[in-house]
Image (tube, rainbow, N blue to C red):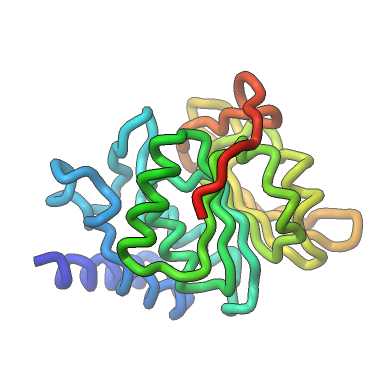
Amino acid sequence: MYDEARHELTRMLRREGIRDERVLAAFDHVPRERFVPPEQRERAYRDEPLPIGEGQTISQPFVVALMLQALELTGRERVLEVGTGSGYQTALLAQLAVEVISLERSPRLAAAATALLAELGVPRVRVFQADGSLGWPAAAPYQAIVVSASAPYVPDALVRQLDEGGRLVLPVGPAEGQELVLLVRRGHGLRRTRLGPVRFVPLIGAEGWGAPFSNGAAHP
């Protein structure tokens, strides 16, 4: 039922300018319908964000593809994902990298994503309930970091955990709308590239919006 819709989504991403064949193959492989609530499954392959509960959304597929393409993953990288959500982007990253550390603020979403990723047999992924704005220093440095929530500024903690030559993609700006940016670490500096306007839910945490959150439980 969903296979042709998945293939059509991949074709749409190609038409819209996604050229990384590994990213396109990941989208063609991962069943997005499994990562949305049952009542949203008929809309799973539309190019739009969908609610997943806890005030969170699963992001628009084109924006996810744009972010993953900007990371330029070769399959050898350790990746930090900030904002596990339902685990869809996590599953895509697992197709593209050697290891994925994913951070989620909501205990319910972290547990649900962990269970679903295990059920689907997604390898080399660890999910932690944590303040994503602080990253996960225990597994640093990362060759790539992707943030699926909007920050008021680029969190220093994430920059410190980025490897030399590493790539960080995140939305930065106010609630009304943000700029998606790519940062590449070169020595003590960062090369910044704008990828376009976006609108994401806010990154809540010590280096995001709102109150600090204590890094906590693991969901291996």
